Image (cartoon, rainbow, N blue to C red; front, top):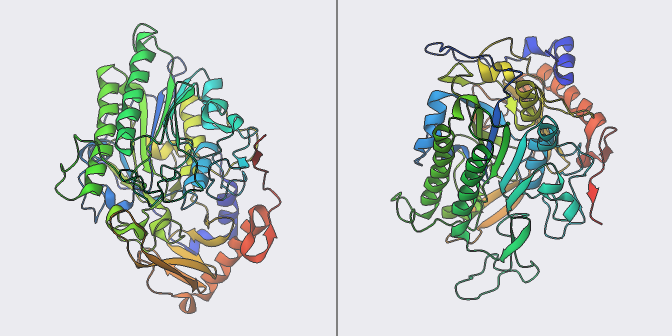
Length: 497
């Protein structure tokens, strides 16, 4: 198995001995597991990617007040990850990492992109969709893209055969903080929000409560059409479905069927609807006889935007939220489900990241890796429950192109950096008050202090020095705008024509 470059340096440097690495809970029983790599029948891949859905918004994670029975079922029957990180605490960079296997700074997408952005994900970057399509997969996307809205950067130019959804966030429209029902414009600088369907714009400023039902409908139609066009599930070619929800990002909404259903307010109603969409996709896989040869991954792009108060989720036990490099911004719920292909009923605290999706799926499907360097690690042994797990290397917390922190094992070191802190949460869809404070150099023991409340740097100077060396290695490779450093391996963003 290929060892990640960071992990190799870590092992050679001896830091593993000073930092405890996480393990995997044993399964209560080992089910009969089929061979994952079957040359005649590569597995289907389904990625379900929520937007601003925090740790505390999923029922099977501690501290949650929300009802998510379908996601909880996937966790019971699959693998629940408890140290899973996205590569950035915001929309565009997190999505760039998911689809390329790279830190966002490496591929030139460290910041959130707006409408008519002059840059985006470069067409020269190889996305997971392109790698799988080359392997013979049919590829489809529904939902939010947010990696550039120029024609050469939209999903159908980046490896997807079809796409229904929004080119960027659902709040990037004229009604931002306004009231569309009363015609109150919130941000006149935002253009009308286009909804793409079938290769063309079919609506401007769509009703927010229609988005999840539409996305789910198109996802189910894709699964039906894919099987029926080829006769049966056994004869069908493999597929990759990427379902990127526009919610629970503000402005929040729930369709009439779910409004008031949770008894906990509109936000919880919306979470119920997202969970129901997950359940519908899984039910369709089972109905069509596809479930036994499909890997399903559910996670979120970053933590909740708690500045919006009752229109935002919660981070569970973690400090910070969206836009921050504390755990609440980047440590996400993640569930992997593949009946018959994995040892079921497990929970793992192994450090894994959204960047691992590309090399892991490549290993499971027989697809090649991108031709240029990536940062993800093949986690197929963890997913299946078989084989030797890779040694976890350092994980770097970047946002946007500032290097804020590094985690190795139980230890996390914050470099001095600015931190956005919510002072007063908002209400009714309007943002609350926030301020920026300076974070000092801080060392946290995430096993003993998961909430990052007690700086123990003074008690562990050797750990601090070793983690500072890891920060410096990252600056050489990927840069750090906090200290004016440019990385030697950073690739340019794509430019809109």
